[in-house]
Length: 416
Image 1 (cartoon, rainbow, N blue to C red):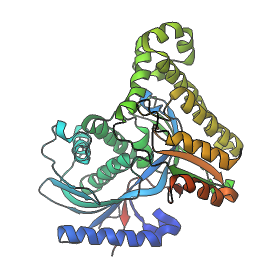
Image 2 (tube, rainbow, N blue to C red):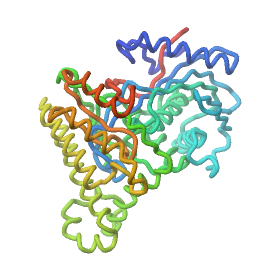
Image 3 (cartoon, rainbow, N blue to C red):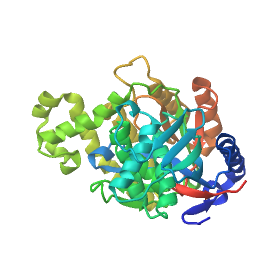
């Protein structure tokens, strides 16, 4: 088999390689039990954590994000009939005829729509696609802010990239095709950050001023050397029916931009909003104005954090995290959903985390918000007590200690 873009378990998972070998072995056996043959290829795409740049990408802003060591993996056999068959563990099987790329309204919000949309995205860019059979397993928490949907999209593009395009689809194009599938076929108006972090890998800053050619910079940042661990706390919130809450953020920001004859806020500056606040409040409401102001300040914070990381100023890094989280809470207002004011698990988790950290480290809402998870940077000497305190409220296994992953979507070298 070709080694194009292939990584070993040891390179991909480090000291977790032994555990992952058992996971891939199980994946292989599940594939064989379902399809009656051994898999030929194995693939992986990671979840991601957003560090700063909360809800800026959809208005061509800036973000700092990182791939994490939770992923979606697939065992795969190519086929020559154009049919894509994907069975994800614990989910119904999807079967897509890649010769039919029409948008199906009855497929909206399903994995089948993402598969079909990925093929359409490849076709639109002049890339090849075709049939395959796959069995997938995921340890990316669904609804966690770690972007399980983006990981799945990137996985499907990565499979088709290697099976039919000799790995020639760039990391940026993989992300753009994934976003296209989510926006147009799945029906969720996400920005590009989730897919980009999953596709590229590592700890990266991204400037989306030109979304066709985003500027990506890798950050040489080792959290462990600064005596801290990255934790994601799952508050067990339910994301069902919250798509309108997410969608309202870019809609409101772009509505404010439209007042100035532009399509996105990145084409303006904060003074445009402040100097026209009276008119904007009357026309779009206070929340839209506040969310727009958050956008500009958040872009500045990305620059601040990039500077802090390059200079090794970890105290400044933590300060930016705290200020970004405060802005998300007060101005972006994505910590709980207005339609469910009695469900405020994220707010509670932030309180518990701050109480446990006692002024050290940092914590903030994670990802899209409204329900799900928070992110915390925890001093290692407090990690055990922090984990115990969080899980006393949100249950055993609710506090995940993660590592940053160097690789994006990739083929994996494994033989059972």
